[in-house]
Length: 360
Image (cartoon, rainbow, N blue to C red; front, side, top):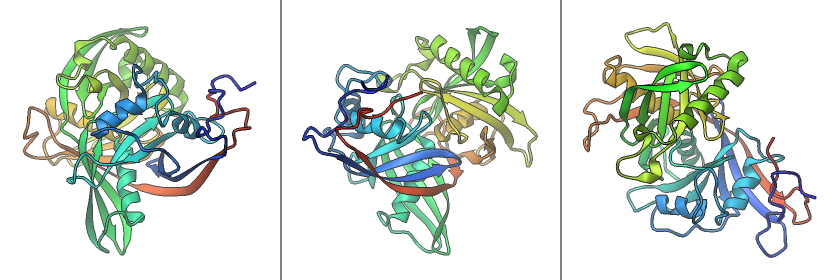
């Protein structure tokens, strides 16, 4: 019998032969990113956002999808024994138009996300490393990427023919609440709510009696899931234009650290989806924090947010001058590094009783 949590079908392509999926794996500041480069069917649709809806499956949701055309591959790559509960990745799809270089559908163990900053950084590095985008020996290569929440840009920094870092320029970010009261098992807390391609809630870890340390990770995860559930129906987490961007995606708990040069220095852990932990400082979550800090008057355009993850890796973030030309938000940039960790050919034999795998 298949293990609990498998689909029991063997995950084949319908012909009864072995399924083969090729990937290139990166990590961005410690967070994995698995780019699928071969072995998947095309997803129909006129836009990346529409393709995401089709990938989720008609009548499904982002966290409870009905099987779409790529669902067996998502499960195969994000579950053990080929993946793990912290895995993140992407399917490459056509961009919305000729103004972008590629399109992408982001996925994780629970479904499909609308945005992913650490993934955008990895995609920029991959596009240059793989020769998809021509890059100078010294200077910056620009990779324009259509994601479900809009068009983002990866600025790939080069020196001596090598990629030295990537700056992720996000869709505009804006704040819907700065001090929203939330009842929790640890008392009433005030949280900020910001939209940055996905909706993030943030709060000081100290406000729930915790600090951002590995030893307290179970408690941080639990309170993150609790806050996410508590705000599921809050008007503050609804997107005013596109309901597909509504709902809390991640909860950012942070500690204040000593700052230098007039900027802000924080350590955070982001709890997203159904209790998944971002090992990086969270790219889109960093954009959300930048929007909140700007709204609080703590961070002026050009000033740096040093954003540290729970494993000690760092993103640098800043708000650009001029704000959002289409509204009341801000345009943000987040800089980090991505490194290739492997190239893989995953196989699934239809006789494998574990099928597309399991989650623990």
